[in-house]
Length: 218
Image (cartoon, rainbow, N blue to C red; front, side, top):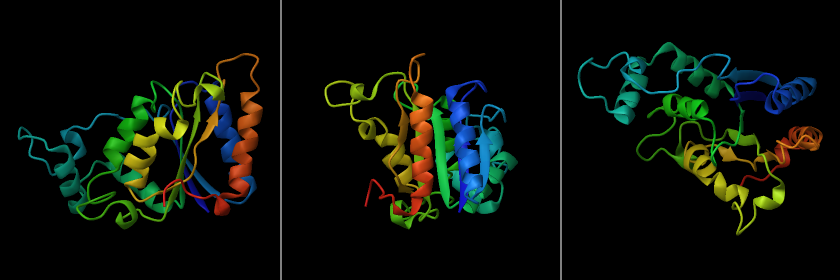
């Protein structure tokens, strides 16, 4: 299996970075091919602008969605976007790993999605969900939160799949990915927590059973 990990955390001594090493090493141990995109380490540019689309006439109005599709079709996207898209096309499974910040992913990862999932590459009119160009690939989230699991229940912070609905359904599923349940490291901010050990075990179990995990959405 070919696995692409898109990773966003600024600190190499973080829990997230340690979990990234667990995931990467275990995938390789099980003879899977792995590529890691470390967005902070690579100083990824988060914001869309006219430099992304090499066929855009400078000084004219930028239509981000339409112009991204035009540039993709013409082979005129910036080199960093082309490289990212090639990695997505290569992968059978994409893992998005990040700490949950304000009910979502870090802005750098959102910027990666904004710039890489261009029109005509990831979606187009009538080509979304199961008909999307990238359809058939699997994807799931590995994330960490600072509180215990019981906070993510009805009446508190919300069910975790509700929190991640805009990402899991509005982005991953829309782009054709088969979305597997998220893996969450709870109580990550507690010094007394065994979050690393528990989450590492769940990650390894997921890798061992990846072919049998049921997607969230039909």
